Length: 517
Ligand code: FEO
Ligand code: CA
Ligand code: CA
Ligand code: CA
Image 1 (cartoon, rainbow, N blue to C red):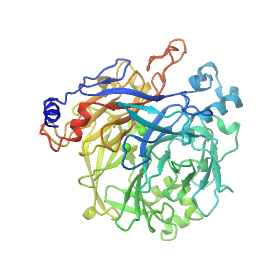
Image 2 (tube, rainbow, N blue to C red):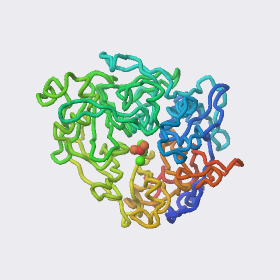
Image 3 (tube, rainbow, N blue to C red):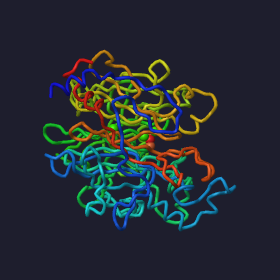
Image 4 (cartoon, helix red, strand yellow):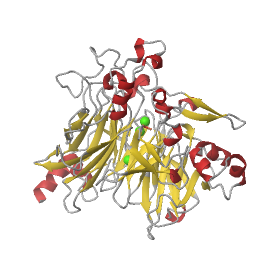
């Protein structure tokens, strides 16, 4: 209505000051309510997992944006809370682990599918809905590949699920990021001799699952929970996977390797709707070229690896052989819905003294997503001048405003001095596209202590921003004195949770191309 439009016009987009308060703070015009938190029952068998990250909503019926399935990643566990194991009690902690602890932790990672509905402005989990389910580190998952890996075509579990994406055919993508923390990693010396590097969680001492079964992009069917790992997209610390469907229904998938001095990739399918047939490319951002990770056509890869499967498993090494550009930890990737430019957060690279990171802009040649050349420029640099540090997740709203979260690691933030001190707690920002503040980075939410805000995802009508509050109280050393008490339950235990952010400001931002700010 006209009255409502006038009310929205009057609402100013005001920046929230940096804060170290142990709470989820929101700027004027935003509200939140909690949808689900760690340990909540989602069915008679299952509970909501630990450390929720990526969220992705698919309506059950296209015409009703208020009833659908929410996928939520559970990235990792803090054993102190999840299984009662305290690393700090032991000199050699991994010698003191028990099978019972490891089984508990394996249940807490992976993802959740929950049916959520909005009634009277509040989103709620439909408890015991037949579609509610957990995918965990114990769930059998198919490899979408013709060659078995370490003798298997079905592997056990998914873990380190950080961010993700959605497919044009409405399934969820969940990305395995720091997989080496759970079952270790196989590393190769200059003579191509393999050795095994142990993990920090020590799960490999209880289950003999090869590291090569992790580090993939995983697709989940929302309706039956069936999962498959897409080998063709390569193996590394995938932050996310962002898909674009070409006119002929082939798909382009962008995905980054969130590790210092690793790379940015894109997969171009050769068949409609396939994440198996096609070519994986790695970015040379200096020369603006996508380099094919193709064993058949690249003699330098043929000389080192025995086949294409090995190239994909050891994508990092193959990329370096081809001369791909080492980047400062590529995190989330989003495609600008208006210009088609691709935005990639480079969170930081302390080894190269890049403490605050930046947002990289990729313009594909002639705007074609299957182009093999592009132009890369810095869109925005982190630091005090722009008011943010360590960009992580991105999301565009319906008007094309860019929302962004920050992730300064907890231990670095807690130091009494250092580069992160002025920024205080991790935050959510918006970069408006229109109005007087267009292009500015404006803080609109501040996270509880030790937490990061992750997984921003807009409901199809743009009226709700689903957001994860991940790992509040992560630096806790003693359960009797947690560093955060958010969400302030009676048990005083900090808990990750998914919240719904609503309010006039979200509505205004989604109409900003109609309302002059
Ligand atoms: Fe799990 Fe790259 O953040
Ligand atoms: Ca992340
Ligand atoms: Ca995103
Ligand atoms: Ca991060």
